Length: 108
Image 1: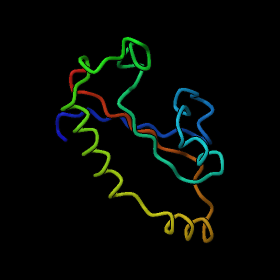
Image 2: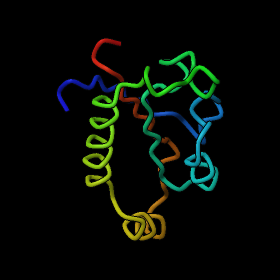
Image 3: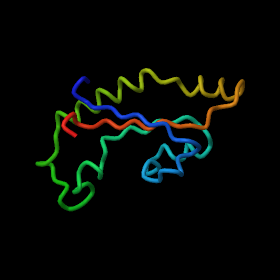
């Protein structure tokens, strides 16, 4: 998706240093030192009406959402499987950094 701006951050430990990056299901995996990736479009940082009564369908960018889904599927396809993680966990000590990837519209 060449029109998506990608920002990648690696957070130390379980992400407690940046609580806004823990606001999703992946945080439970970080807490047990399991690798997890958070993909976001910026949510409330991009759309001030996010999860409010003003968060209406007529202000949504459906092409952007379609590109987010395509980019997410492409990203997931490159990630190791749980079985790979379990094998690595048993044979080596895992790095306790975790990745946050934000996909934003190119106009952001």
